[in-house]
Image (tube, rainbow, N blue to C red; front, side, top):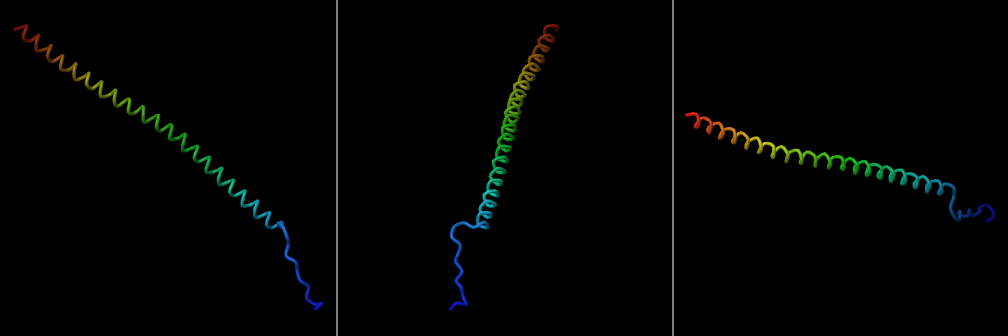
Length: 89
């Protein structure tokens, strides 16, 4: 029985296991940083879009008010013109 020695299983963490753990942690860290960066970029871009959207809505409301004012002035001019025409006769 001297021919076959039993090989002991390594106890603890080997260098290979440590390198796999470190590589896994590095990959997870890189992916997390990429996700955080993209989330921040999306957040800031959406803030810009929301600001522009509010400005567009304000301009649309202002356009409606101006159109109503123009219509009122047109009506006033037509009425005033007919009053002058009636007054001249």
